[in-house]
Amino acid sequence: MPQASSKEEEATSLKKVVSEISGTVFSLPWLIAKDHGLFEAEGIDMEFVRSRPSGAVTHTENPEEVNPILGHVAFEEARVSIYRA
Image (cartoon, rainbow, N blue to C red; front, side):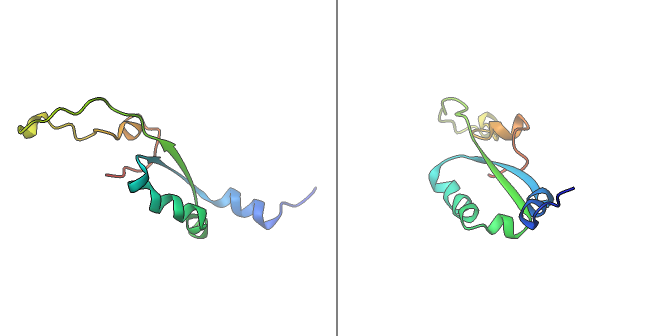
């Protein structure tokens, strides 16, 4: 029976974390960290999903009318495992 290489063993032992990409400005540090292997170095298999627009934003001065989930639909749909506000 062939043995898995250490690279394969390492890949299977990583914890899977899914996060959303909500825009270049806010996601750039996360993407750079992934490209530089910082997540893997900490034992994390990071996956990104694109957030979907949640509709038009209307101006209001009433705090009761503010949508706290605006732009974070992926979290509400359980497609990601962390919430990035």
